[in-house]
Structures are given as structure tokens and as C-alpha cells.
Amino acid sequence: MDFIDKSELIPDSDWYGQYFIRWIDQSSRMNRLFHLLVLVLCIVACGWSVAAETADMWFDEGLNYYIAGNYQEAALAFNRSVMINPDYAPAWHARGLALCDLLLYEDAIDSFTRATRIDPLYASAWIAKGDALLRLHQYEDAVCAYDGGISLEPGNEMAWYGRGAALADLGENERAIESFDRALEIDPGNAEIQTIRDFVITRVSSGIHPDSSDTGGVTFAGGDGSSREAAVIILGAESTMEGVIAESYWISQNYGAIDTGWEKGVQYLLSDDLKQYDLQEVILKESGEVIEVWFDISDFFGKPVFP
Image (tube, rainbow, N blue to C red; front, side, top):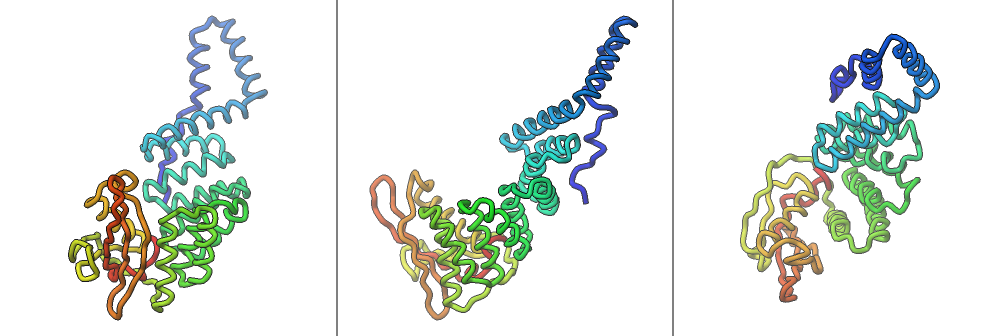
């Protein structure tokens, strides 16, 4: 299914053609002949450059819409750009990003594929394709796309991170951990990657494999997180990442925004015979006080990394 109706984007004639026609109609007959000759010569001599400039114009307009968060209009503008210049790889890539933000991942993958066919060395398009495939749980294809991007841009930590997530969801835990380690070599302070890596390691030691059960929205139960017995219970997370985000949300609701009210300290993954826990140190910015917050993560532990 095509996301965008092509008929909405094709004017009755090229916009620059309409401009010249109006201009010619306002001139004398002799001027019309002269301007018509000039128009023909311009189209023959530099028609391709005019089309390219027009594609650039729509591309720039799409970027403005995208930066403003108007992804629908951005996708339409990028679509016009590639209709004028079908070999415009950056516009295909940008169109895919806008479609991802509209949750239209299959259409986005088509755009990223077009970008990499036009320019096989387009690392960002390969990586973005991997991200979209990961969202659709097409893990093997995602790994291939990430591999394409990493071969061109081995210093991209998010490509290694996405590759690790896809491998973890395939149950290839050792390869996943290797990918997370490569990501952390590039960005040692990335707490998110470190957390996911630790989850996978604990999952391996527990013999738990990923599943794809759907449990609905996230809710909180249990106590105030001050001890194992009073752990905050996270329920309904569809993925490990959603559960991790829920932990940060709960802390922010109680101790202020991250980086201004608090920052993460040491984190421990613990377990007993029945439950899995995440013990998170919270360092309060104002006082420097270190608080331990216990989370019961049994409900989402072992689920796919991403929803």
C-alpha cells in the first residue's frame, strides 16, 4: 500500500512551466515568440539542473517540516522531491525517517532501500533501515541492514546497539553482548546501552529466552522502592526497553527530571528463586545524597528488547 497518493503531488504541469506561461501571456506577440524561444533553449540546455534545484527546494521544505515535528507534511515534501529526481538518495532517506515517525515502518523500509540502491555507501540509510526492521520484529533482516551500515561506519555506537538488540531478540545472546560491548567502547558513558547489556547477561545466566507476549500499558504497583520487600513493581511493559523507560519515569516523578534533579549511579540486576529485581542508585543533584530504588522487573524481564 502506498502511503502517499501520487496524484495529489503531481501538478497539472510543472510549476516552473506554469510560471513561464503566465509570463508569456502578458507579453506582446513578438515578445512571446522571443520568450518561447528562450524557454525552449533553457529546457533543452539546463532542464536537468532546473529539476534538480526543484528537488532541492522540496527537500529543504521537507527538512523544515521535519524539524518542526510536522512529519506528515515532511513526508509529502520529500515525496515531491523524489518524484522530480528519483535518484535523490538523501530525499529517500529523509522520507523514510518521516514515515518512521508516522509509524509507517514498511513504507519507510521501502524508502531506505531505494536510498541504499542509489547509493550503496549511504551508511545512515542502512542503519535507519535496520531500526525500522527492528520495529517490525524482522530481526534477521535488521542485523543484515545494521551490518551494512557498520561496514561503512564502524564508529556508530547506535548501529552496534541496534544490532545487539536484534541479536538478543533472536536469542543469539553472545553475539548480542559483543555488539553491546562494541557500542560501549565507542560511548562508555551510555547508561541505556549498559542497562540493556546487563539485562541480556542476566537473562543468559537465568536461562530465559525472549518472547513476544503483549501485555498492554505500563502500570506501577508494590511499595515505595526503598527495599526489596517494598520494590516498585512494573507491570504491562511490552519490552525490556519500555520497562527501562518506566523505571526512569517513576524516578523522575518522585525525584525530579533526570540530569537536573538526579542522575544514575550504580545499577545491579538481582534475582531470587521467584523474582527479578533492578536495584538502581539515584544520586540527588542538590544534596549529593545517594538513594537506592528497588524495582521488581519480573513481569518484563526476558521480553524483546524493543516493542
